[in-house]
Length: 260
Image (cartoon, rainbow, N blue to C red; front, top):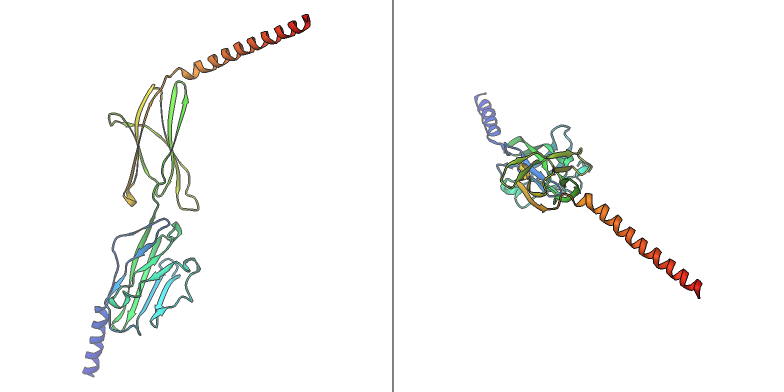
């Protein structure tokens, strides 16, 4: 009886010794790239009794399975077909990390890494978050005397941090318009700055802390603030002069031909 108790106690201790290791902080996945979900365990010789299962925490959907020494994808969720991969060369060394290709917003969430072998069974949760690099900002300038408006348009995720600064580094007030996220998992953003000064020297700064991306664009414009009010008058005067000259020429030709 004592021997059985000792054996049971030893087995419990051995089970407690087996553990799965995953990151305690969220893991970043970038739109369109391959996301990596780390998961490690204490390896044993041979893979005959090794089972690795990745699931979504919220609904237990199977993302990837490995047992009998190979991938078992019969129960894999359709959203992950042909997108997931385990590094088979590293599995014997205790690496159960999973890769997800073409990462998108719907892939963000919590994933459970479950590993079983002769030493025991354990699980760990990996929190995968989503971000998207900013597209190159598209510049547009609108001159409407006496105002000049500079605007940048771009796509990004999450909502970016935007700042307009003057030539002396002072913070300027800019108008920001952000539409809701699209199917592609990005925000469409417009940011503009308006002034009545004939000289414009500003810096537009865009930051995405999630992917450590920072963009700065400088705009330097000098213009005559009265150009738009004079232009219609100049154009109209020119057209009247041309029309008058043309009419006079036609009358002269008509009279000359009639005289002949």
